[in-house]
Image 1 (tube, rainbow, N blue to C red):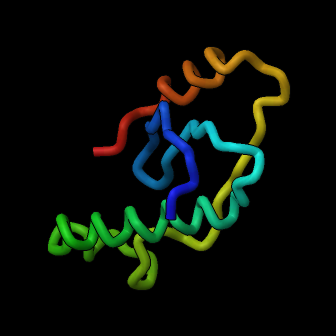
Image 2: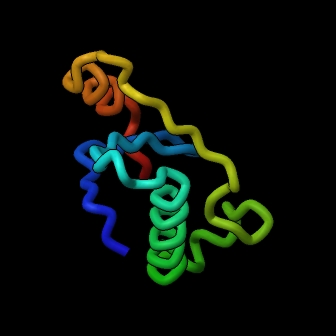
Image 3: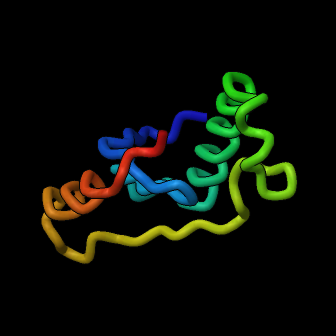
Length: 90
């Protein structure tokens, strides 16, 4: 599914990731997040199945939860710097 979005920033920690995504106002965030989780899960399982097995949550790559926030008028450069300041997952 093409949402017309691009993730300009992607960083995170051992148990979560930070994505800064620019999307059209018509995109349903729940569908976007579910798509990102589904596609990334398939790729991670395909490419790293042996290593991944000990890190799964009940057999799942991602938990069911997620958080989406809006910029609230903050400059995009400030938010991008925050995301970049997070450690990139290994």
